[in-house]
Each structure stands twice: as C-alpha cells, then as structure tokens.
Image (cartoon, rainbow over all chains, first blue to last red; front, side, top):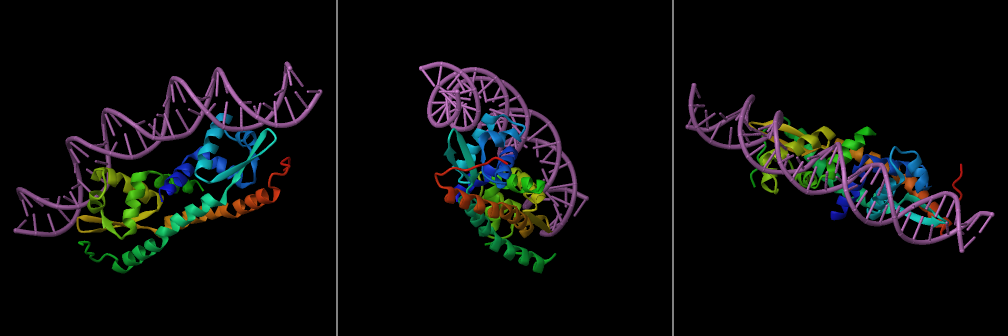
Length: 108
Length: 108
DNA sequence: CTGTTTGGTAAGTCAAGACTAACAGTAAGC
DNA sequence: GCTTACTGTTAGTCTTGACTTACCAAACAG
C-alpha cells in the first residue's frame, strides 16, 4: 500500500528507469550500467540503492564487483497494486459508456 | 515507451495517487474529490489534468460539473509496460538462484 | 439579465531530490 | 606488504514541480 509509493516513485525518475531497463537485458555490474548512461557512476549507485529499497532489484557480490539484477518481488507487488484499480476502472468505464451524455446523480 | 514516463510520473505524486484512489470508488466531480483532500481545488484540477494527459482518467461534462472517472486505457498501457519486465526478471532471478553464491561470467 | 455555482488557468513561492566531486572501504594481483 | 580495480557514501549545488492565491469562463436558477 504505502509500499506502492516506494515502488512507483522509484520508477518515476528517467535515469532510474534507464538503469532498470538496462537490467532487463540481464544482470550487470555497476560500472557496466553506468558506462551506457550520461550520468556518473556514483549517481547510478544512488539510483540502485533506491531501486533495491523498493524491492525492484537485488544484488550479489562476486569478487570486487556487485552484480545487480531485477527482482520479481517488486514487480509483483506493483502489478497487484495496479490490479486493484483495474476492476473498478472497468465498472466506471462501463457506467460512463452507458450513461453517455445523460445525467448522473452523485449525492450520497 | 516514452508514454510510460507520463504514466508512471503521473502516479508518482502522493496527492495524485490520492485523487486516483478516490476515483476508484466511482466517478466524482472535481469539488467532491477536493473536499476529501488536504489541498485546494485548483491543485486537484492541475492533478486531474496530468492524469488525463497520461490517459489514466477521462471526464464528461454534466451541467456545470465535470465528472472524472478512471480510464482503463492508461492502466492497460501501464500493465503492458510492467509485463515487459516480468519475463526478463524471472529469467534473471532463476539465473541468480541457480548460480547461488557461485561464479558468473558476464563477458560478451 | 443578474447572481450563484462549478472548474480551469496564471503567476509566484518553496521544498524535494537528482547530480557531481571528493573521500572511504574492500577484494584481487603482483 | 603495496598497488590497482570496483563500489558505496557524504556534502553541497541546482533544477523540477507541487502548492496557494488570485482571476476568468461557462452553465443553471431566479
């Protein structure tokens, strides 16, 4: 719920989305991720921290490198959050289509 | 793609999420949405504009009122964007689980 | 036609956060 | 041991955007 806030705001930043999309191609160390982006490596480190706190990525250390990869947990939580609206939206849309240009009473 | 940016950043703001969740209960005029929130009505108007541009909500005029409701289109697009990562993430996760604490070669 | 209700718009203020530069830490190679 | 890669952290700057206060437009009531 309030966890959805972390999930969404984590993906809200363009650079962070770029990092995430880079990880879509497969696990990557930090330096390799940063090399394809117009920002410095520390910036990428900070973004990875945010993504990790949100549960969207995870990491494992191999030698002096840290390999990051997409964590399905975060994506699953985000999907669940979206589905929460899906049903309601269909009802609202159906209602709007049926009502068309007609009147609607909203008092409750 | 770049449309996903509008979708996600639209839902990134807490107030905008509150507006969206309010609309989950059903179609509502602007004033009614604002009355349940700690911000002024103009602020809600601005947020609704952003949500509308993203395709997350739609509106229809009835008299002097404007009824807003959730638009499934935006949600569908967002879901599609997420699913784009879902598959890749499963592969990456599986790979990480199998590799465990072992070695991984990343050179390509 | 006048007044009321309902919403969208413009200008300006202010806080959140993305970025860089500098520093600190850990593992491998020699 | 010392040096070299690779990464995380901190301090400080600067831009983005959320908010309020005015103001303006449209639709109904009388």
